[in-house]
Image 1 (cartoon, rainbow, N blue to C red):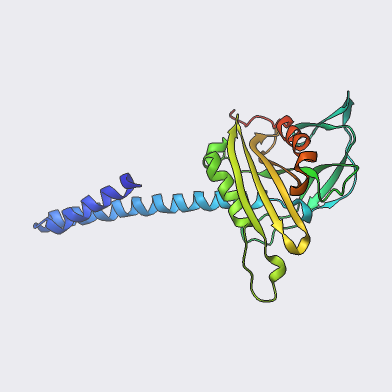
Image 2: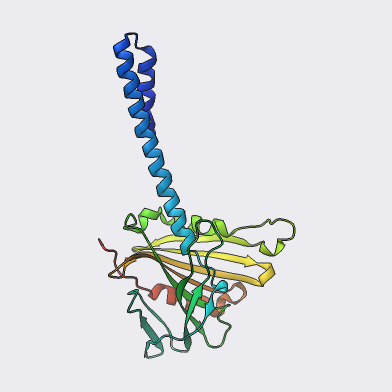
Length: 259
């Protein structure tokens, strides 16, 4: 940022101290060009930041808002089932006694959010799918996003993902929208970012641990930001953490177009 601003400051000073009319004209022209370059850099930076925010907002999925429907097909092997998505080119392994469901996310209420998207969800048959599940969503990503570093570092990504979920205050009459989110960890895992956070919405009875595994990939037609979101109740960590985290760690997204 300093390198962007410095030329403008130097040119501006030169314009002020120059005494000859031709020199002033040349210096003033130089100032305009420098300021124009600076404005262009600022506009580019703002557009890039806005694009990143839009992509994150669109990828952010609270699974409790999803609706579930038809099962997918997968292959079972020695207590584990491996699913390979023929369209989106990701794969994941999970316990064979978990059920595989097709779902959909509603259009986002956020200004930068996305429209309704198909999702892929698995959940144990012994539990309510809204309490324990792993969901994978593929959000179309622009050509500018060639690696996860395009979205910032791992901590910045996790911070940007979780902070918007923390809404400890609400307007009178909207108390049901109060919710709390806290980032636990956000690290790079190979080409992916792995995030852990807690989320609580008292009005809905939700108090859960969440994992997110995010990565960029190309399905042969379109580039995507893939986000796998897993959740289980905070009071049942001993029961679910190992299983859910092993599912998250088994996920493989397709490589990027230039990867």
